[in-house]
Length: 241
Image (cartoon, rainbow, N blue to C red; front, side, top):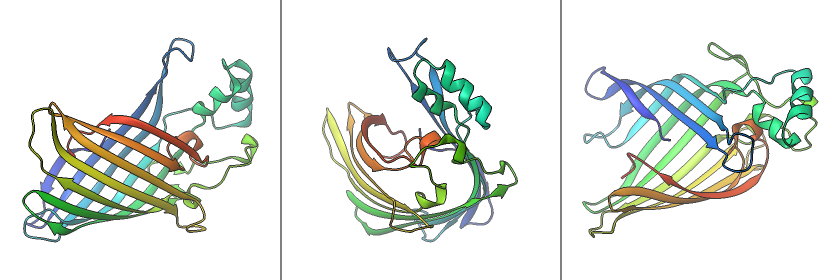
């Protein structure tokens, strides 16, 4: 799901304090015992927004208290070995590896092209992952005892991101409006060595905002953020149209 704003406290006409939360869960049907729901990502953050135009469409966000984790519990070699021995399949134990970081974030949204029926928006985002933060404490990322040849620190695959989004307002009873987006991300350690590319194409189907997406790269699963995978899916994206 996308982040939802719960608090907006105006600090002048061109800035405000926000709290946002994003959550992600995986539902396994027919592939695991009891078809469990597995927590994938929990992302609360407190940030200041500074609008840079009169219409409050362009802005700079600074997240000074942000946290990201997957809500799992395995953080020792003994726990991991026990999970491997008891899991329905050994690879399922990796979903239970605990990951967590506090981070600082700076995001800039700019709209270089804006017409009544067409808009082109650009986004630049920089994340800095703290090795020891006020909410998480010591960061939990890849451990050597996991013995995975793809294992690497988070800042090698995430931290620098850019996105271009095109929106076109269209009429119609069945298909309405159009959204296209391209996202690129890499790490700030060994920049451009590990890359992620994501494509999105969305429209409103009978007023339901559906987006078809495809992605190749890293970070789609927080427990195994270091693993390069290709995936695709369909999502309901509330608030993007």
